Image: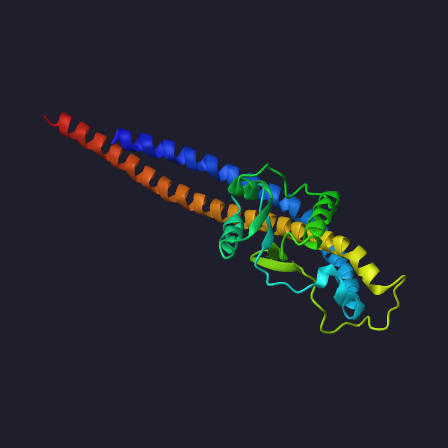
Amino acid sequence: MGADIKALRSRIRSVDSTLHLTKAMGLVASSKMRRANEAMMKSRDYAAAVKDAVEVLTLSSECAKSPYMKETDGSRTKIIVIAGDRGLAGGYNANIFRLVKEYPDAEYIPIGKRACERFGTEHNSSENFSYNDAKELSDKLCREFCDGEFDRLGIISTKYVSMMTQEAQISWVLPIKKAEKTSGVGVIFEPDEITILNESVPEYIAGILIASLRESFASEVAARRMAMDSAGKNAQQMIDDLQLKYNRARQGAITQEITEIVAGSGT
């Protein structure tokens, strides 16, 4: 009986330590949430503005001659995979890698320490990936696409829906597709549409990439906060259950001692 009580006491201390850790990580995630959401909204606005300009350009017949709009069979695929830098974020990273499995023949470009670990490349941080980093990668990929080294480029990232919901998604960014409709018809570009398009595409892809990174980071923070809240509730429930068992074990031990004393005094 004494051994059971000692084991329960040790178990309660262990779970209580875990509870304090999950609370601390939840508070850190909460403190990052506002800044992450602000960065996400700003990058969304920038990406949307660049996308609108590119869509207007795609309506020009001259732009159909651009290497960025060439039709391909899509057999050679490159995919930028954006995952988190840390674990303990529920299904955030698992959902990304589940989507990756749908494209087994693609060449992957990982961003985020978890993605780099999975694909065995040098670690980089998704949280600290700057616009300059995005532009450098975009310029490189645009050169390779124009040289015919691959047929299409996609970005696997996480869409922020709400604090409760984040969805893994893939966005295809190359080749550029002709827009179905746009409100910018009639805009005049100088020197000409195809020149402007070819100059704008690297900027466009960098904008889409940085927006995907900021949205993925906001999703990671939200997922980690919800995961820590859930873990904290589970830990507290476990402590309550263990405390009940501990109290019962103590009560049983005390009752046994009293019984032994009474039995001993009667002999």
